[in-house]
Structures are given as C-alpha cells and as structure tokens.
Length: 141
Image (tube, rainbow, N blue to C red; front, side):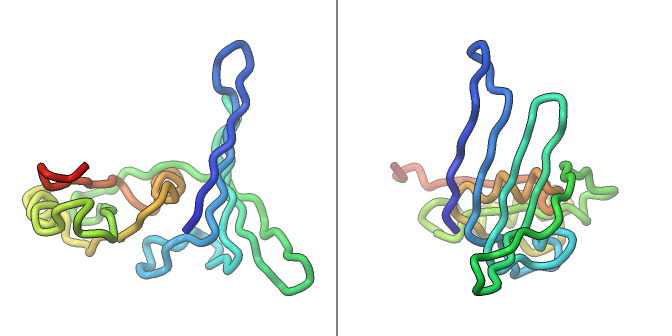
C-alpha cells in the first residue's frame, strides 16, 4: 500500500497530520479496521488535542464515497497472547524466525501481520496491532 504523509507546522510544532493508504491489510481479522474493509483505502488523521481518526474510502465507480469518520486509538492487549505484532513482508528486511522467537518468548501466539510501507503506523494507531518488529540482518543497508 502507498502512504503519503502531510503535516502542518504552527510555531515550529507539528499540530496535525494526515496519512493516506491505498489499502490496509486484510489477511487477519485483527487487521481490518472496525466497520469493515474499505476497498479504496483509508485516511488516517490526527489533530493535536483532538485525537486520531480514520475514514475508509469506498470506491463506488462514481468518483468514490467516504465512509464514516471514526475515532481511533492504540490498544493494550489484556494478555500477551492477545497481542498482534507486525513485521515486514520482505524477509531481507527482517529476520522472521528471530521475530517469531521473540514473540513466542513474550507469550504472543497470534500470527503476525506482514506489512511494508508506513501503513503500519495507521494500523497501530487504530489498535489493530501492538508492535512492529524489525530485526534486519547485520548486512542489511
């Protein structure tokens, strides 16, 4: 998925941000954002002191339509076994076997979501994953 980031600086401080993802992961029920899938992707919005929001883009062939804006927030799993972690799709970006051992040693039993691009930040912000694990080979640049 493609993601673009925009932010607005006021007095040299970031006050708002927007990220647009052409799609969000759908391989796990934990990854889909509440309210169902949005075939056109998602917009993630944040405003200082106002919170974070997501809106699905439902492409209907007539110029598209926006789904309802929803407030999103990170989640804290009740138990480690309920946690969902993400890792890169590309095995050269991260050692999947090592990440699996870290997850198992932490009590995480759910299969990972594999994502590339910055959509992972929207997925974490929406509470659909708890962490992103990245353990590249020493030779990775």
